Length: 266
Image (cartoon, rainbow, N blue to C red; front, top):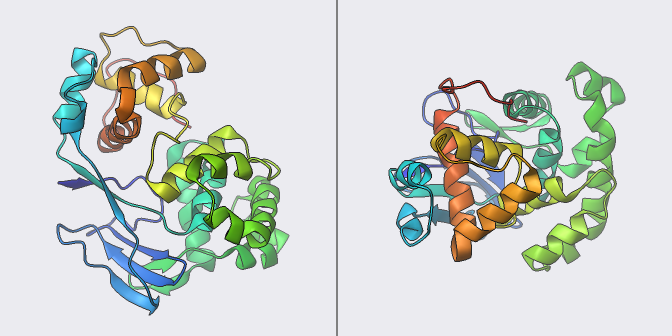
């Protein structure tokens, strides 16, 4: 068993630790074999775990290199981001820029506004984003993120109850009514919030990059729509598992140089 630590809220030095809000409380989570979150405040259950099992891919017609890479993984655990606001804000921060830059930016925001909780912090609330001075965005190198984050914060505070009641596919469409929220951001936020990676924009550069890195011998489409169509055909009913495991495999190989130069991750 291993953990998918894709979300930038994980405090990674030493034992990975993360603080998260749910609709009824707040929790401190450690990535250990025994999932035993510590209650920080409130009531209710801790954020749920989703497990993506490579054994589910055995029946799929995957190319040999990709099948070998993913089926060599142990089952992968991921903590579902119970805080829809944080999922949406994180997806906005990830827009356009490289994954490493997005993680640095998110952690800087966490350090500046987050509520200290153990070795890490609870993420800033929507209300905090709306009261954050423009100069603070600039000081954090986030001036170009100010408008979309503030628009999303306003929309979240107006619509959070109705969004919470929506099926995931309807939520993806609803999020796109917010200015500067397109299909990529809405899908990434919904996947983070639900743990269903069939909602993730699986034709994006990250999935394409890791599929090619895992299986360089295959002729993968370079065009995003063509890649997405092939990915759907390969995945069948296991689209969420295939996408999540490919991203998890990529997470574990991100620091290893590719055999051939490629495009950077966003």
